Image (cartoon, rainbow, N blue to C red; front, side, top):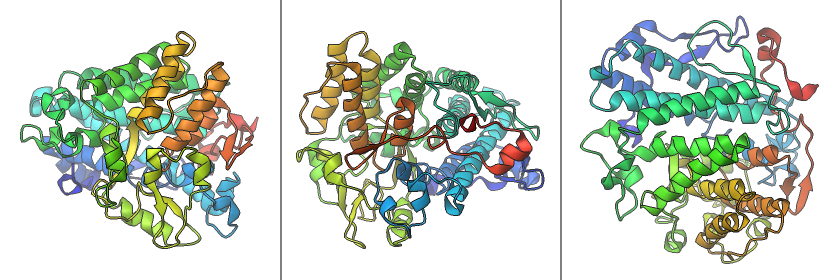
Length: 486
């Protein structure tokens, strides 16, 4: 779905009022415009497209929640060596420092802003019959809005709450499942998870009978179908990889179930995606797509993405970061990440044209035809989830899943797995290689209570260092508790 076919959110956008200090005290920018927007079925579709655009903000997945703040915390970069860097304090986990605090607050506010827009859309849909919309559109609209709401809450939970594996009943975040000026109650982590799974189950049920991802036209031999394949001349039902489609929802459910140590369901959902790939819905990126000229190189491994955000401006955004020494994100010790010279993923790393330092090509301005996408869920993660979830029941089969992933990346399929602890170290190594620029690694370290790897050393973090602090107004006026401070 190209941005030219997306619409801004017109009068639906909501802003945070500063008078009461409560993030939920939000109002539509213009109620009249909102009424106009929701006066036609196409208006609802424009509203949903605007929600996706909001997610590409630099406050959210356009920087902070992916290659920016979250990957700085994962120690992918040499930021900690440069005290003049804007986010040096983030690299040493000083969350109270001005620029770091501002970035954390902005990520919280932007994601809850987007959640509020999901709730407005769902509220407006509640008064409409499915027959009001073109065939299948009602299910897609509602299913995707619920799935986005769940996705955003889950990342907020992972970032701001205490480690679920050690404190499932620790106080976490509010789950905003309605648009209201009333304060949403802060929930325990287990309560947030319950609502996330409720929304995802509902989304799956809505999407399954209508989502075009099951159509044979999305199993094309050119493998660009998820991003370029129009469906029955219906733009809204096309370009499914740019949307929270059925497979993306299923993949997210696998991620959530792994987070809660529900190994049975984590494996079930991950295996559903792996089976879909075997039937042609996804494929691992072949060596030729890694080694192609920069213009042709598949820098995001696009045909294995279950879900990506469409962000044609990402190369310019990343370029502006790379161009400024105080913002530059030079990768740290690439050879320590990619231990084998044969690893195809090495071709996704190159020298900056500005600083001559190593950077990821996933977002760099190299005129790649495959760029302009922000990876959100990918096939390789499903192999890691399946492997981890299956180990206690079938160690050999678990090792086979991880070995298959390694083979698809051009490296030795031999996996150390004599103990679960040894096996998880193998998964951590693969995740470190796989998710550069995608904001996933820090969450893995936190979930496992694993030392953060910087070069070859492991850094033990405190409970507070693993938890981003809520905005001060949330604590002061919203009465929120932050369990990591206890």
